[in-house]
Image (cartoon, rainbow, N blue to C red; front, side):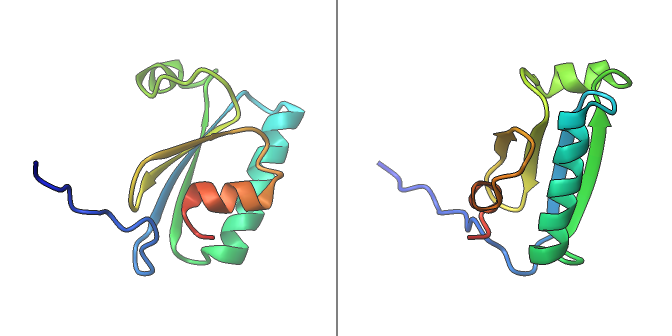
Length: 101
């Protein structure tokens, strides 16, 4: 049996590629955007790309990503893809999901 090479969860030089799926300007979506931007600016300053996607405006993208609940954050890289659901108010949970803490 061949051992799979481990992928580092946290890449200090890597750019975090993040997609946040929301539903218009709902209170939950607005909170998720603000909370995530605050976390990214504090912990990933200048090392992240955040794409906010409104599933009402881009339903095909939401379908391709198999979005089942919103707000949903998808970390595409670096490292393993991760998905987080909610308004991103639990900072420690978001940081763990991003592989920062």
